[in-house]
Image (tube, rainbow, N blue to C red):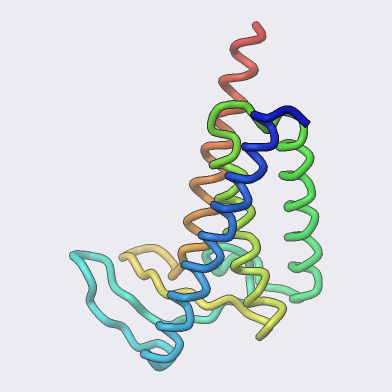
Length: 154
């Protein structure tokens, strides 16, 4: 493996671990500080509330934890394959670190307690967590990287 590729893998792993640690730490603080459904005003329209989610991101598609765990593992494998093709592509390590860290943060909850802890509450939007936000930002970045690569080959 080339030095840039090896560096990209290491950076993605560090970012992944950082996202997992932050997500699990904040979830632990919220779980120990709030009762289910309790809401605390935080900043402007942002509030912190304790919610539990048996579905996927933003409470969508509730279903079997086993099926959702399997789907998460499949998505992680797909991201790993995409990353392995060209890990040194600019920004790729950030996208992969965010997606993987977010997916693992929620997967830990799902395996440990059968549901995901959500705590960020915005008006007109279901509660979500840092892991969900990392996944969304990572997927958007991954899409932008793929689009830019496709346009460069034209």
